[in-house]
Amino acid sequence: MLIINVIAFVAIFSALMVVFHRSPMVSVVFLIVNLVCIALFFLFLHAQFLFAIQLIVYAGAIMVLFVFVVMLLNLRQEEEQRPGWRIQRALAFVAGPLLVGALWTALWRRGRSSEAFPGGFSSGFGTAEDIGRLLFNDYLFQFEAASVLLVVAMIGAVVLARRRES
Amino acid sequence: MEPSVLSLIIESLVKVVFVIGLVMGGVTYMTWVERRVAAIIQDRLGPNRVGIAGLLQPIADGLKFLFKEDVIPPHVYKPFYILAPTLIFIPSLLGSTVIPFGDSIHLFGRDIPLRVADLNVGILFIFAMSAMGVYGIALAGWASNNKFSLMGGLRSSAQLISYELAMGLSVVGVLMAAGSLRLNEVVEYQSGFHWNAFTQPIGLLCFVVAAFAETNRAPFDLPECESELVAGYHTEYSSMKFAMFMMAEYANMITAAALMVTLFFGGWQVPGLSKASLSPLAVSLIQVGAFLFKTAFFLFLFVWVRWTLPRFRFDQLMDLGWKALFPLALLQVFATGLGILKGWL
Picture 1 (cartoon, rainbow over the protein chains, first blue to last red):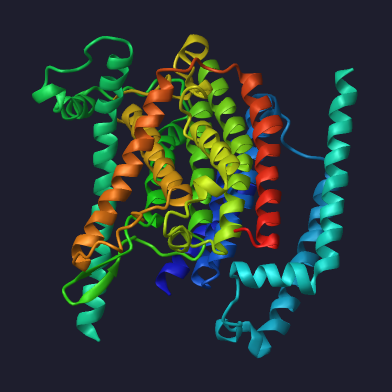
Picture 2: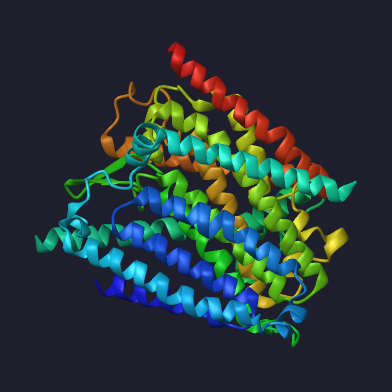
């Protein structure tokens, strides 16, 4: 329990640092820390497969791309131009409370039902077999639709890169 | 209840110490092997002065690293500069903990499985750790605040994420055949000389090539290619911090070699050992010995290739990864699928 609390604290702290730190590179590193913390939560739920996938896909592959982009940006200029537009700020004041409200109601509803407790999960929760069964039986259509979407996005990226070349 | 928990803790601790000690000892002596083998290949002597046949050379080197001045250049971004060697070193050691180095050994009236952690996603854990190792290199390159380092860091991250795909795909065939992500079950599947190396040669080829790239070894050592980038991402590092990069490289090599043995060469299995009537303890020890021997062979292969093949160019490296290894590994997945469907495997 103590370990989970420590990880939770690190997760929240790193999430705050992502938003508040001035240097984009430091923000990216804290985002990685945050994602690793989430992977550790999966591990504590005995979802070893999810733990590994979270590390490989989110903390690994996706964040490497973030690191890449930030490394190639001209950081000094970016830092000077930091203060954003006014509309952005105004929107943030509206969107922030909305998000908090949505999350709160979701958690509140969930918290009253018995499913919220770890004991309520099926014994195979988060194993490779369980995820495989969900993806290829219960949610096959959604899974395939998402993969088509990704292929389209990939082709789009290739087309954009090609156009600039010629 | 109390003594069994205590004995479990002691058992785990002993195993952790054994595996980490083995890897660190391997790292230390791989530097010696590397230099001696390089010398033999280049027809010279190599380090042979400290101790018998130069065997104490790694210890002398270690001491030297410890007592050298630790220079932190003024232009670096300190937090990441200091963090980076740790970030690369820890995952490289963690990866080795899920590899089964033997079946189980019967000691003090109980069966002790010979691996530190028996994750049901063992192989994915190793991939996750190698994915984490990328950050050490990328951050080292970025924090050094130096063109050569940055280029080295960028190259290495590009190389690692490209070859991770080919590596992951080349393993899929093995996992399909064994029907499990558990490394121990992959080894058990290969019992009776039914090694994956014979049934899945393309997968083996892709895996070995990708493993060379993943460990940043020649002919794929572009990130630290001295003719273009001085020393790549560790140009600005000195003393023990520099040593940590080197140790991480060798630890990764050991994990990669052990993984090759586990996935394709039957792990700790010795063909025909069950026919010889030996005591269970002797069988266990022979199996551990066989695993170490096979791993040592692949470690030698790493060194052998490094001093024999010239370095690739970066675009050739990327072409090889995406246009050759990736389709080949996919082919292997299809072939294995077909094999399972037809009942050949």
